[in-house]
Image 1 (cartoon, rainbow, N blue to C red):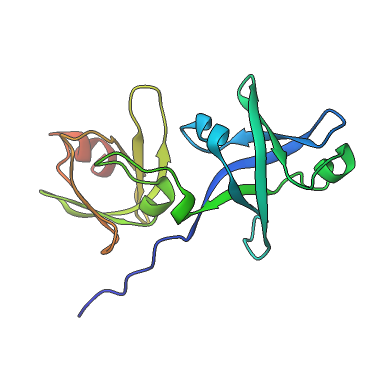
Image 2 (image 1 turned 135 degrees about the vertical axis):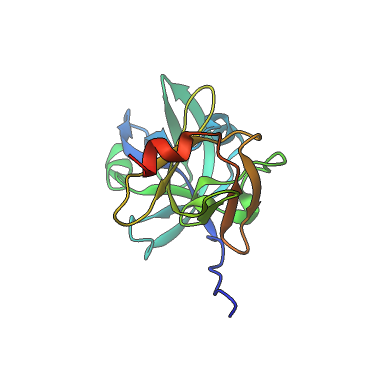
Amino acid sequence: MMKETKPLRNILHIGRIIGAHGLKGELKVLPLTDDPKRFLSLKDCLLVTDDEKERVPAQAEGARFSGDQVLLSLKGVSDRTAAEQLKGRLVSVTREHAVALPPDTWFICDLLGCEVHDKTHGFLGQLKDVQTGPAQDVYVVTLAGQKDLLFPARKTILRQVDLELRRIDVDLPDGLFEIYRES
């Protein structure tokens, strides 16, 4: 029996509008991407509600940084009132406007929900979260009735990622499985 595959998301969220900046319509954006500099070359984007039912096309006219936030200017948003009305919206791009990824890297939203299988222990659960860190990411795998299993996203552990099959094959280091699942 063939498992039904879920298509990859068509839009990728790169930031959340957290407020207005100044009087000329600049938006304060909290980046949701590990490459905030991508806002500097942003052209076409979408302003999306949390439920993703409303997707309004927008054109970026410029971006600059203020601490860990992006100050984004959009065409047609020219005063503080207009900017404040967009608070809470997600700044998103279609997959065709996404930045190109280097080999062996994936968008987190594409990995979430994938089944995780270990070479020795078989099915471990589904990928629930990816905790990003300065040195490496940590994958969080959930299985009903079990403690979450965490492991570093390292080439020595990740054997294969197949987004079409929604499957991640791993080779956990000796003892890691036992720490989480046999305690």
